Amino acid sequence: MRLGADGTVLAANDAALALLGVPSGAQALGRDFSAWVATDQRDQWSAFTSGVVEGHSASIECDIAAPTGVRQPTLIHGVPLTDHPDGVR
Image (cartoon, rainbow, N blue to C red; front, side, top):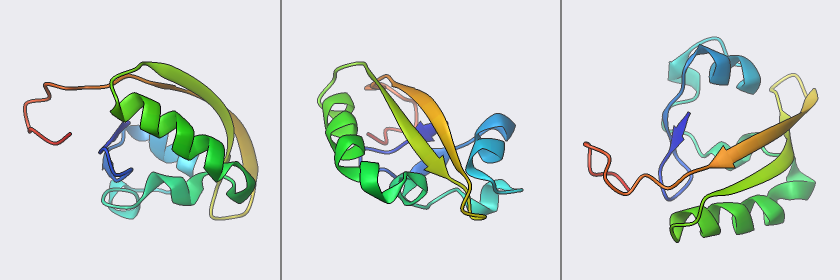
């Protein structure tokens, strides 16, 4: 999965879509990824993403909440992509 600096889902493969509990990319692309992060963990998510945007690789374990309400513990590794061909930060 690839997220923009603002948290927008820019790309998601089939595994990412399954994690998010959505059947198609159309239901994920362009949405703010934090909407899937459990509400009580969004402050930690924000700190994690800020570090990645600043250029630091980082990891976070948080719960992803599918549209059904099921929470799934997930380990996410963030790596800054400063030179992606599309130019989106």
